[in-house]
Length: 634
Image 1: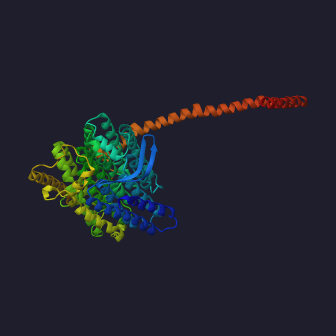
Image 2 (image 1 turned 90 degrees about the vertical axis):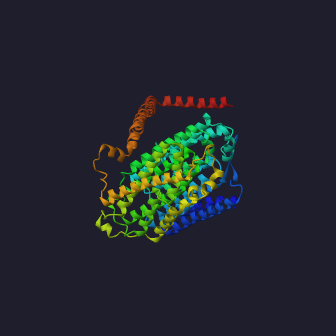
Image 3 (image 1 turned 120 degrees about the vertical axis):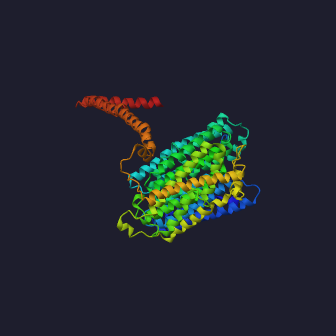
């Protein structure tokens, strides 16, 4: 079974090829069915591997298909590493990916390029699966670049709008910046370990001591790659703009693929990162800063997808906080629960946008919960989960990270708690403004509001069940659980020597969790009081704001800073450099050639003087020269 794990990759690849080649012959429904079934087949196979892996002693299976590259000291196989970490990611990618494919059949059925959409969606799933299944860094990088390409194609799917093209280019370019760090890291890994194979690199890493410069450099470079893919400060501004693509694409990028790649890279390379305390501190600082900044920005956003986008950036920051603390399994647990409730939030937003004829401004919504009961209930469950309300999944995964933060640093714990409070505020703000009160949009649209078809609501219901029950995968000891998820992942992760983030007294841990829960409940009440009781409506995007409000609404002016210090100087240099090259080199060469031709022409024309005797003389000289040349060559 493990030897045939390549089939998991083959299914979505076949879907990409079939729907791509026959895009003009297949109906949109047929393409959707083919693409969805291919991802479902990969999920079933992944689930089978999961259950088999739990029953065997050796929980890491290497599958080498063939020798891919063999040049000098460089020997790389095209192979896969099937272990608890990769199988967990495979199930998230294919399981959530299948539900997104299913939802897309209803959401995208009217689009004229729906076949191309499903083809690219299958390629996206294939690339992410290749990334997490690879047994070496180079093959992982192929999948890494594949998801970058697919994100570019799908973010700019509606390419006829320049703004969407700009968003796609922005995502592509900013990811290339991060990828440069990844490439440098790969070079450093091969130089140090003379291999890019995971097993070889990780086994040799045990010979290094903590804090060695080369390991610190390698991990910092890998982290730069993770910053780009997982949208961390300073390379996070591409992710909110990625909302230009179809909403199911946003769900796939934010929940099951792309942004989770950076988390996976760090967890997979935990053997290296635990030897680099400086890098771990950098990860922690970046995680805390990103989580807090993105949460603050989300508070003032009016576009329903932008709120969810900044929410993703903030939640990824919380995952990186866990990574920086060495709580790798806690980070991956939050990746798992986040995949459930964030996919549900985006697909719920897609259902709302679909019903409201494309409207995305939450100021022009309201009072639609009775018209869309399934969307409302499932969206409400997702909001409860991301806010960390027990017994929903987000409570358990966030509590693990908060416990780790409290054990490590009260300051980190306090900032993470503030981030959690902000999360509950802006998510309930979103819920109240969209579903409660009276409808504030076009009266003609209100009469057409209806629940989405079953092909869209069934995925919502399934994800709602997962968002509710997902936390039970890893019930902590203080609640009588055995932390099955963390136990399952242990063979794939290297921990710090002092890894013990559980508070010795479970009563204290319960009191701590209850204290955080109380703060979140108070925050939810404040949100309800403002947006339901007082019916406060956020100011429009065009309204003049105060200094602080404007600073937050303009996203801390990150884009403006990049534009001023990077883009404008680059454009100025490019224009001046291009002008210099064109004027002083290209024009000089072309004009010089032209001048030479004119000069030679002016001199050569004098030969035509009309004297027949002169012509005969030149002809004889030419014949003698030819004969002499032939004789000399012999």
